Length: 228
Image (cartoon, rainbow, N blue to C red; front, side, top):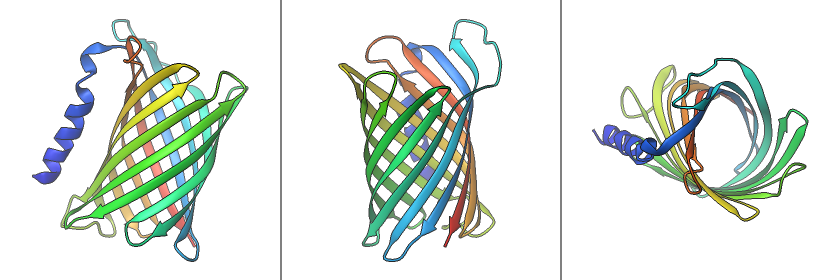
């Protein structure tokens, strides 16, 4: 019951803006994450994510379906764990979009709280993006996540689990300020300690501070691999 109420709260808090929507885009967001464990609680994360747009336009207009490749993100993050539930991290991401190349620098703090039947994770992060097109963008982010097993009190090998991410993201670009809200419910399958996969929906809404809002719907497909 606690997990169900938490899920309903996440959906309700993000969907309060639905009535003001005017524009949208939808597509696929597949990604692969490779984590490498290092001595002394250090860890490296390599991530490759690509984006395909299938439809976009206004909600009141018919959608023309297509499959257009939008961009590729390649990132490397190094993190250090302190104690049993805290870690700090920093890294770099390069975004390739047609002839445009953007460079992003990332800093973050994560805190994980473990309970009897679920985990609650808080992530505070900042990033700075620089590119050849447009001014630099500076963002401040907070994400709260929960995950829990569908069978029993903990996730075991070859079992399904549920994960929900809820994030608030403030952005400053030149003199323009924007707020984006994200809700990502996921169904995961835990193969073993070194492999897992997740599917779900990544819903985002932004631009509602300065005018008509824009919604994004991404079908998420994540693969995770741990190497030593």
